[in-house]
Picture 1 (cartoon, rainbow, N blue to C red):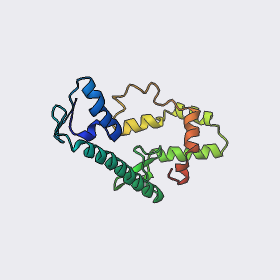
Picture 2 (picture 1 turned 30 degrees about the vertical axis):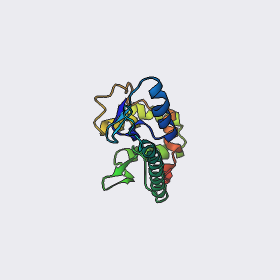
Picture 3 (picture 1 turned 45 degrees about the vertical axis):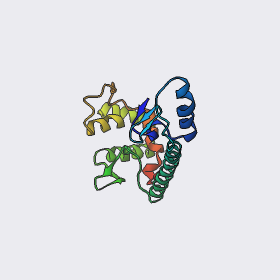
Picture 4 (picture 1 turned 90 degrees about the vertical axis):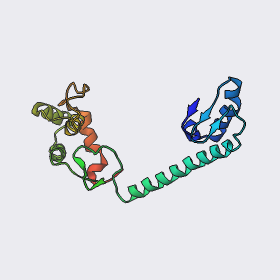
Length: 178
């Protein structure tokens, strides 16, 4: 087995050492970590256990730091998702900030207005289907140039009550980031 470096093989020190010292030798498997100069054909691998431990703790440390940064960003109200909710787009100057999408924000406002007027989600969906309004996934695909190449849109204007209810229940439309 050949890997770029020991960390690519595994981050759990106990499992890495178990495989390298027990499983591989018992099955006549050679292990090579190129950048770490580890080759189990030779007995000069004294640093391998230490490197494995360092890899495990490095991965844990980075994970904690990333989680901390994401938590701080969330507390600051930054948007952390990769795809903007329907009706919004990411600010071109700050991808962690949502701004209204000129086309779909009008549709979202219309959904809420119609719900307040007493229309059911099913009725709104039927109206949007008749008007040929693209469903959120189809709109996103068209906006990002993926609509023509996608085979997954049998009904790109096939609104359902579930989609309408999902938009109505999404706290992002109340100004909250979740």
